[in-house]
Structures are given as structure tokens and as C-alpha cells.
Image (cartoon, rainbow, N blue to C red; front, side, top):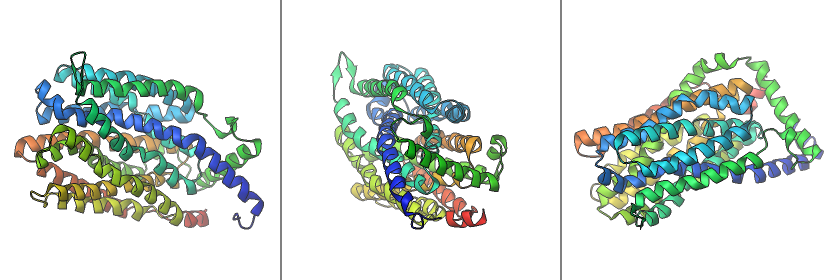
Length: 437
């Protein structure tokens, strides 16, 4: 029965959803900004770090990418802990550990230390992102989930927007005999450490425990989510083990691998690509690198909002990746016009980040509880191996060819594959799913 047929439900629905969003969205958004800055600031640091430490492009690409091997190792068990143990405790502990490791990255002196610290940092961050995606299913109904994920994931491009001027400033300092790139990496870990302590007290695991909601509001959201779970259980009675072997889940993992290949590969290498194409100094390159991420912020939210409004997921997921592939191709046809390349990289970034929020609504169409948690973890863990493949492939191909073009075309191929695979998926609108149930 719709809200129009039950007008007395409309005020509590709006009030509860608004309070949940005001309580959770800003804090989770902040945590993800800290998470992503700790992950990608290495791209800015590389402008000077590679020269100071004598790293080749292949060494830097391998070290940047090995983060995602560690990320892969603890993904599934970490995410299951969010569902079966405590999201609040797990997220808080992850922040504290990765904050310490992120700061230690600024103390490295050789390639071996670089590889190990990046691997351990990836392991520490492993459960955070998929854990939050699962955590959002504790608080948001399916029809609200695209916007919720979009609000959370807008932190990715915004972290690059905020990180650029911070990096530009810190890269110019030389305090206590330490180069600016070291201070950039050391200082980025401290806010994560403090936020991890705050998360232990601020987050609430389940709506039934939320003292900041009224009794009526707790009952409403709990009832809505319970009905959604029961509907899915009628359609698909899958265990966690069955879910991770589901053909649709495996296909989603491959698609996400291609997406992460693009997003992380571009994030880590864009500053150096711009530096070579433009000949600008380190400070200016760092600021210019923020332009594509600024362009991506509003598009990311609009994609999630429109996907929720239409309850269509497949084209909202596939279309942006196909656009990104075309834009990346055009960036290599810009010739000496580096500003035109920046425009194309901006369009590609808009496509890449418009993909994310409708994508994460796909597995929750047919999965719930531990099955959803395990599947989301598998998709994210396998997919994030693309975070190793993308940076390393660009570094390797650049050393072999002497140009970044080959690496960018590798990203083009991954983007095309992601878009086409999504179009082969069997997905339906939420209204059709409810009718079938």
C-alpha cells in the first residue's frame, strides 16, 4: 500500500529518513574522505617521492597497487563481522589501525618498506568500504539506497578536491629536515586515528538500538527493513556460500574489477600524466589535478538520485563507464593541448563516479542478510584487485613505451568491458521485483 493510500505514514516516513540521514551521512562521508585521502595521497607524494627514493614507474606502480592485494585478503571476513558482530566496533578499529599505518608510510626509505607498508595499509582498510555498504542496508530501504550510497561515495572525488590544495601546500614544506611529501603522508593518518575513536561512541549498529530516534521511528524503519528482507527471502533463499557463487555476483565482481582499474589507475597516475603533458611545476600540477574530481562530485549525486527515482539500475551503471571509455580515448587525441586533455579526463571522471551508486544497488535487488554481506565483500575484494592491476599496468606500460598513452588505452578497454557486461545482466526495476514476489 502506497504512502498516498496511507497518509498517516507519510510524516513518520519523512521524519525518520531525514533523522537517519542527518545522523549518519555526514559522519560516514567524513570517514570515507579520510579513508580515500590516506589511499590516494601517494599519487601526489609520487611527484617528488619517486625522485628522492630512486623509484622507477614500475616500482611505484607496484607499490601503489599492492595495497589492493592486502585489501583483498581480509575483505570477506571483515565485512561479515559488520553484519554478524558490530559495525561500530569494526569501523572504529579499522580507522585507528589504518591511521597509524598511513602515518608510517611517510617514514619509508626503500622499495621493500614501501611494498610492505602499502600491503598492510590495504589489509587494515579492507573491511571499511564494503562494511559501510552493508551498514547502510541496516538503515535504508532499497528505494532510498542509491542516494545513500551516492552521498557516501561522493567522498571519493571530494577527497581529491580537498586533498589537492592540502598536498600542494605540504609538498612545499621542509620541517625538521623531512621533505614535504613525507609530511603529506605522515599528517594524513592522524585524523583517521582520532575519527576511529569517535566512531566507537557515535555510530549505532541497528535502528532498534538508536536512542536518537523515537520509539515510533525505530518501529517504522525496523518494520520497513524487515518486510524488505522477508520479500527477498521468498524469492531467493541463499546462504552466504551460495551467494558468493551466484553467477550474477561473479559477473558483478568482474565489472567492479574493471571499474576500480579505471578509478584507482586514474587517481594514482593523473598528477604525473598532467605533469608530463603540461610541463607545469609540482605545485600547479597538484592544484590542476583537482579539476576532474570537482566535476565528478555533482554528477555522482545526480546519478544516485535519478537511479532511485526511476528505479532503474542497469543503464545507470553501464552508460557512465561507456562514456568514460570514450572520454579517455579522446584525451589521447588532444595532442599538445593539455587543457583539452584535462577536459576529457574530467568527462571520464564524471562517468567513472556516476557508475558507483547505482552499481551498489544491484546486489541488494536479490540478496539480504549474510548472503548480501558476503557477496558485497566478494564483489569489492575481487573488484579491488583492479586497484593493483590499474596502477601497475600504467607504470609497466609507460616504462616499456615511454608514453602514458598505452596505459590510458588499457583503462579504455577495461571501461568498455565493464559497460558491456552490465548490459548482459538480468536486472529489473524494483516495481517488477515486487510484482513477481
